[in-house]
Length: 184
Image (cartoon, rainbow, N blue to C red; front, top):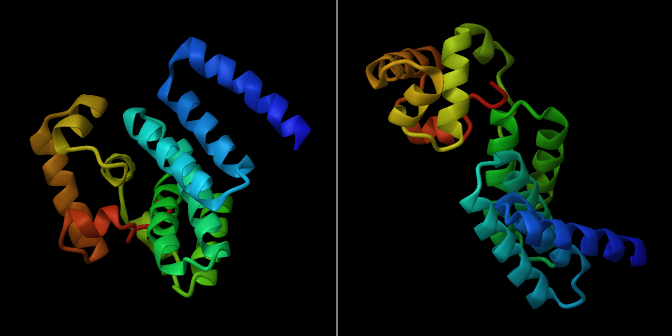
């Protein structure tokens, strides 16, 4: 614990100097882990998630969602935990961070909910361009934002998304974001 506090102090100094949302989020995340009182931990986790929402590092946000969900589950707040664990799982799957996906899936199972396992053949049916688009959409990007990232038109993104929906047997962007093609 003393070593963790020293590391937190160093990270806090960096976060204050850089003003980076991911660093401020990580500081709040660490404070939540070191909190002695559950209400303080909840407050710090919520602060961390708010900071992550200002940034663009989906992986960092997902790590915080996982830690918060696990904390809630251990305190027997299983229903509250599931929201955070699902969000973590969806992001880890979308980023193809399989060890983290496995951990989030285990925590979700421990909360009493079973997460659908990834269909390994789903990725095989998508083109590399479609996979890229799925990753951006799973992170919450609009067609216009995806188009800007890939240097294509929004209509091209729309065309690829329609193909993705057909190939995966889904009918909405919401299903895609919820992680149907997990791990793509």
